[in-house]
Amino acid sequence: MTPDAAQTVWGFPATSWTLVRRARSGDERAQGEALEVLCRAYWRPLYAYARGRGLARADAQDAVQDFFATALRRELFQRAEETAGKLRSFLLTALKHHLQDRAAKEGAARRRPEGGWADIDFETAEAEWARSAAGPSGAGPDAAYERQWARALLAEALARVEARYAAEGKGAVFAALKGEALEEAEAGGGSVPEEGAGGAEMSAGARRVAVHRLRKRFAEALREAVAGTLPEGGDVDAELRELGAALAEGRA
Image 1 (spheres, one colour):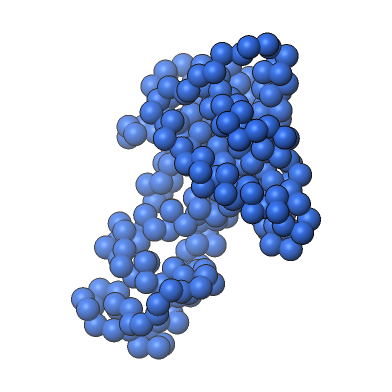
Image 2: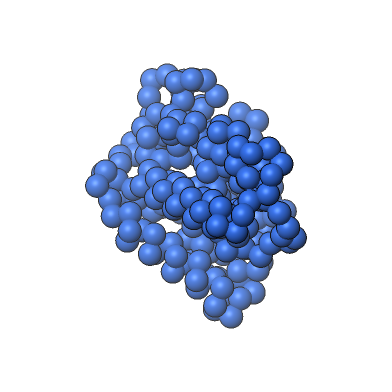
């Protein structure tokens, strides 16, 4: 990615309306880079929606790749406006229209997107969708989409924090504390290297401070990621509540 690609202050590519605007720019290279980031960030929720609509696994894979191949030709984003609302809603509406168009065209040509991102992990996405569909409340297509959207933003926030720790030379600290800081089950435990102190172990107090700092950074990164998908002045707190509810429903 070139230096002029959209970046956050931590050097992680911004997945936001900024990228949609860049995808509509007259700079073909910038368009391709912006769409590449959008594709990689948000194909999972779109795949979950396609599966929830009843498309067979292979057809859903083909539909998502075809959707982004069309986007890479600028046919979907050229008239998109941030004032239209949430990026989450815009992408879902665009996919719905795309699926309708595909259904109306007999023998639509199957194609893979250009740009080198055809290595997307459909196996993992399929497993995630199957788990959601097998839950007590099932997973309608819109609910499955929102659930995977929330997970995509969580993953983006985590990647931003990891990049920040790595830039500070504290990658080992992040790896050791992320499970505890994000309330995930830790596989092992044991001692954690103290920040900036070589192999010295953290005291219990220092560990608590480090965990608190990581949680704070993650919360900031998540708010930044969510804000980037909303129109200017959008309600980040309300969006976080909606996404949290989507995740909670998936665990019910």
